[in-house]
Amino acid sequence: MTAQPAVSPPGVRRIKDPRSDRILNVVLIVLLALFTLTIVYPFVYIVSASLSDPTAVSSGEMWLWPVGFSMDAYQAVLDYPAITRGFLNSLLYSGSAMLVGTAVTVMGGYALSRADLVGRNLFTLMFVLTMMFSGGMIPTYLVVKNLGMLNTIWAMIIPTAVSVWQLIVTRTFFQTTIPHELLECSRIDGASDMRFFWRIVLPLSKPIIAVNLLLYGVATWNAYFNGLIYLTDEDLYPLQLVMRNILLENTFDPSKMANADPERIAQMQQIADKLKYALIIIASVPPLIAYPFVQKHFVKGMMIGSLKG
Image 1 (tube, rainbow, N blue to C red):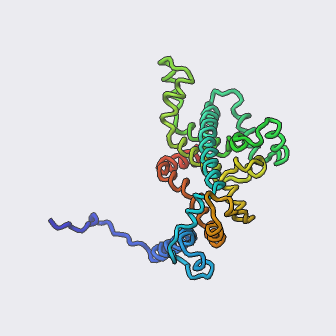
Image 2: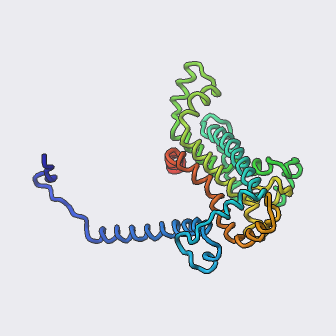
Image 3: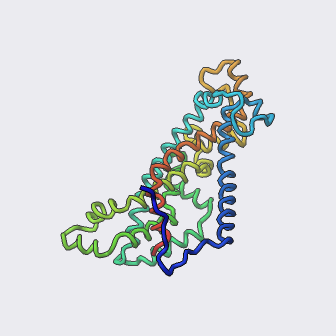
């Protein structure tokens, strides 16, 4: 059966898009394409540079696709103990920060969303003030030192355990998603506040939990400043701090590689610049892997938590 073209009802004229609207759509598409290109091209270039011959990269022969395909840089990364150790440290710090930060933020956001919380507005004001005023780096360092957290995993987690912005977004999510009538019904059924939170609130809060997990994880994964000021033991350095030392201070020492012989050391000296590109790719892999799994909840949680209420 041949499909019939849509026919407008009698007396109704079909309105065509004005020419100005079509021109605007074309301009927006072009701008978005250029914006996408500025994001995609650097990433493709870094991937290609990490897989190309170092001479081709330094001479400018490689500008998009790999030239002289080689995996030497990634093999060097696996053989360099500081990089492997830093990667594992970053996984530990990020995973711990995700769990601690999300737990504290979800519980705090739910408490602030309850209208029957005594002093709720005062607590909210105190949290918001910390977004505009802070004690500074030196007082914070002294607090961390006096708490005995220097050169420990807690120095990478506790000082940034709560983001006030995420706390406010989480509070707004609960205010707009969990109706007060639901709490009243649960109380009639004899449920306590804690039981209501665990059995009803948390199952309905997957979007905002995904938002917090991703934001805390990415923030901790990309952070190096806390490690720079709180850690002096190189065995505790996160990957980002190891990368900083290699990229900015050129501290890559091939002699520290496992099973390094003179020929191997000379070869690694030649691919030192190429190693930097490989490090950038390796540092980008975990967030790129994690995001697709939480994308659905992430978008929903951000929209509800930040635009409503």
